[in-house]
Length: 203
Image (cartoon, rainbow, N blue to C red):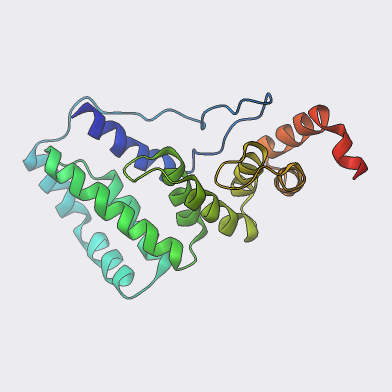
């Protein structure tokens, strides 16, 4: 049960954009920022029903929009499922699956937040099979749309060969793009990178 709670908390954690990896030191990347706040117990069935009833209008509206193909609504619905507090293991697993299902739909529909979150889940293996290649694919898609967090994480992927071939030029390129947007981790990582590989500027 504790393992399932960790998985559920990880879905919420990544969905809240806490996956940006901290600044180097090279060559070992640090863990994603933040730690999941894992509840010791879940609400009772009655409490869960009360929460659902209180949010039912918003939930039903969001679900209808999501089912019509609205990627922003799909992303929101994913987080609604992730943040629910079901009373037992079966409900927890069901909500994890639904959350990931809608997160993937939103990502495929072009929602940057969902793309970034899905990349984080695939990288950590929280609730899904760990897949660094697909994770890096989604980081790239979000990075190419200008997401500074994804650009920073893509820099890590190229630096350590996570899901792609190791490539220092590409790593520097993406750290720099993140840094140029003022992302603190991107700036720190670009500085650390140049200190470790100053020759990159000569190429």
